[in-house]
Length: 188
Figure 1: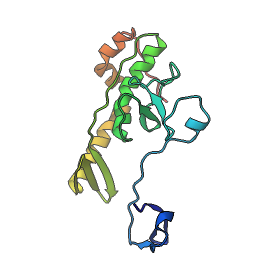
Figure 2: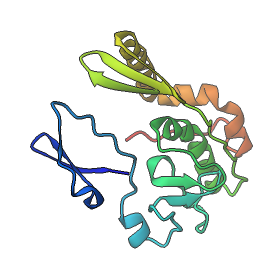
Figure 3: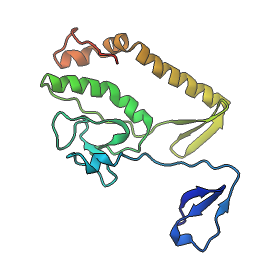
Figure 4: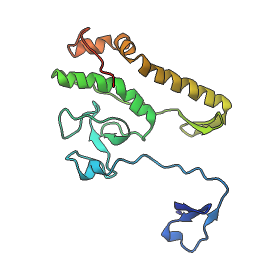
């Protein structure tokens, strides 16, 4: 298999195994890469990591080898539920991470989480246009950009109203960790 490893002067440079092949010329290139963990996580910390350098966590987002150390999003690998790196997993981990940080602080049991296995990917391509994919299906169009814009704005609005939104949606979680109505949110 030939793998592009570089772009030079509007041409793709392939792997050394394909050195006999001429570079592939193009007008535009969409270069898609996967997430990568920062190298210091595996080289300069005591945390257990995958071969790719992602911090290994349990389904509570707690490090598998350090109690009360949590990781979520593109820097971690949930041992019980491996998933591809996608923003939806980091977003969905947020409320549970908050709850588990409070639980750890007050020495209460942590809540496990099983992330969804399928997700909708919406990528803006510029000029109010987007591509959507879910599993092996894909669509494109301006209407998908409008959907993405709506979803993104709704999500960001949650940060503007974080305190009231969290308290309304997570009353039972706060009571489970012994916080009752005394939880406060610190905003940076």
